[in-house]
Image (cartoon, rainbow, N blue to C red; front, side):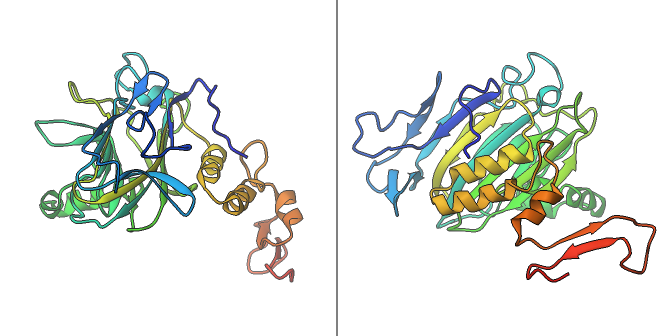
Length: 314
C-alpha cells in the first residue's frame, strides 16, 4: 500500500520518524539526503523522541524548536530561476502533526513561509493554534487578529473566497495536512487543500500570481513550541502536483494502526487507473450506497437513475 517512493525524483524532502529514542547517540540528528535538521532547546526527557501507545513522535515543548533548512518555495527548489516559481512545475507539501496545550491561538507554530518585511505578508504555509493556511503573493490567508479586524467589507468578502486554502485545527487531534499545487503550464492553476487524505478546499491562483520566496527570506520549515506543545510525525515535499491517489495512499501509509491503513486504502480501491471512480468497483464492494444518472433528459422521475442503498435495497 505505501505509495512513498524514495527513488522518486520529485520527492525533495521526506522526514519520517522510524525507530527513534532519546537515548540514541545521534538523537539530535534527523536528515534526508543532504538536508540536516537543527534542534534547539530540547531537554531530551519530557520532549524529543517520545513513544506513546507504540507510536513515536518528535515532541516539542517549552519553547523547543526544529529548523529544517529546506525552502520549498525558493527559486532553487522550484523551477531554476523562473519568476513563477512552483507554478511551472507544481508543488506538494505534507505535514503530519498534533497540537496540545495551545497557549495563544494567534501565534505561529508551524511554518514553511517567506515573509516580506515591508508588508508583513507571507508566501507559503503558516500554521497557528487554530488553523493552517497556504498563502501566495496575491492570496493572503494568514492574518493577525488586528489585521483581520481592520479589513474593509470588500476586503473581507475577498478574504472569504479564499477559505479553501485554510484548514482548521483541533487540539489533541492528529492531522495530516497537504497542499497540492497545479502547475501553470499543465494545469488549471489550482491549489488543493487536503485534510487526512481528502480534499477540503480548492482555490485558483492568478495567472500573474507568484509562490516564489520574497528576496532574502527563505521559506524554511520552522516548528516552534513557544505557544503550544507539538507532536510532529513527518514532513514531505514533492516538486510536482500530487494526485488524489498518491495523497490518500500517503495518508494511509502514515497511520500507525494496520487496520486504519487497510480501511483508508480501501477508499482508493474505488478508483481506476485514471483516478476516476469505477462504478464496477463500487458495486463489487457491496456495502457502498450509490446513485448513477444515466439519462438527465428524464427529469422528475426515475427513468434515468440507478441506485442502491447501503442495506442493498434499490
